[in-house]
Every structure is written in structure tokens, then in C-alpha cells.
Image (cartoon, rainbow, N blue to C red):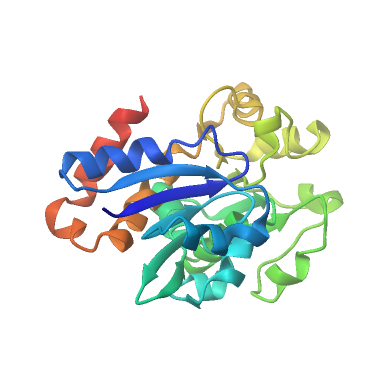
Length: 263
């Protein structure tokens, strides 16, 4: 029996087992998907092998370490430098990134021209790159400037927080874990003026109260949490885990099943 899981820290809130198992059960596939609370990134590869997994998803804060620990990296993950999916193939761990396409699928019809991305981790890199590839003017900011060069090397502007108000952004994305701790990703004196001219606020976190999205709603913005992105990246990951899936279930039906179990 094939076994899969999601690695993260924290991980108890993850809906990944619920949505993956819903698809696997709907197709009567003898596979099981669980979750694993990983304490330290350095143990990711060894734990994957010890558990004899056929595949795994990797979430915060391990995506950049997953990139380094994969035996081989394919597709857009090579350029992003972050991996959210492991597949065990011919004795090797192959790393992929389904975050980028998962995010883009949720936002591609929103008529966005400019975007501000708050955060500089693995998810932020995936989103910045997919936006740039689709001709969206994307800017990145973060409390620490340690990773500014990573974005600038891709010709994605990294904006210091004292200059954020110089540009109007249609879309403001929180790619930090701040809302898991019930704090805003930027101080109010910066964030609220940004909301005044924006159209959409998007938080990659999902479930429960969200201080970032609640604040955006008070400024009359359309808001979106990370649940749809989670579902779409999961669909694309499952297609890597189980290549036969595409023949048995179309993307729209997979989305419908996963959405139902999230309600």
C-alpha cells in the first residue's frame, strides 16, 4: 500500500490529510495520507525514507530545506529554489513545486496588474516567480532584508518598508505565518494605507480567524484565504503521486470533492 504524508511545524491545523484522503477514497485506491510533525529540517529526508513513503508534501517552514535535500529537482522548483512535493522514484527523492501553479490557478482571472508580496520564504518565492512569469508587476517586502538578493537576482524588486507607500498595489499577499500567531504581517501604519488603494487581500494561511483578512474586509477589500491554493496544489501533487489520477478524475471534479470536505 502506498503511503503519503505532509511534513510541517506546526502541522496539526493542516487539511492536507482530509482533502487527499477524500480523493483517494473516492477512487477506491488502497493508499493512505497522514501528517508528520517534524521538529528539525535536517531530519526531513531521513524521516521520509524511514517512513517508506511514496510521496509527501512539505509545508512551513521546510520548503527551502526540501529543495536542498531532494536527490533531484524538476520543473519550476529548480528556479524557485523551494520544494513542496517529494515523489519517490527509482530509489531517488524527486522534488517538485506545485505551490506556484496552485496559487496562479486561484488568481489568474482576477485582472491583477500589480501585487505586493509580504514574506520571503519558500512559498513567497514560488508566488513571486509565477506572478512575474505571467506579466504581473510584483514587489516583495519583508521585515528582514537577508533574502532580498534572491528576488533581485530574478529581477523581482525587493522594497524596503519605508518605501512601500510609493506604489499602488491591486493585490496584497501575506506569505508569512504571522496570522497563525494572530498578528499582522506589517504594522498598521503601513498596512492600512496599502489597503486603501488595493482590490484584493490574500493570505496563504487558512482556517479560523484571520486578523489580516479581517482588517482588509474593514477596508472593503475582496479577501481570499489559502484554502483554494491548498486544494489546487494538492490536486497537482496528487497527479505526481498517482499518474493514473488524471485519467480517472478531471481537475474540476477533484476540486469539487476536496472543497466539500473542507466545509
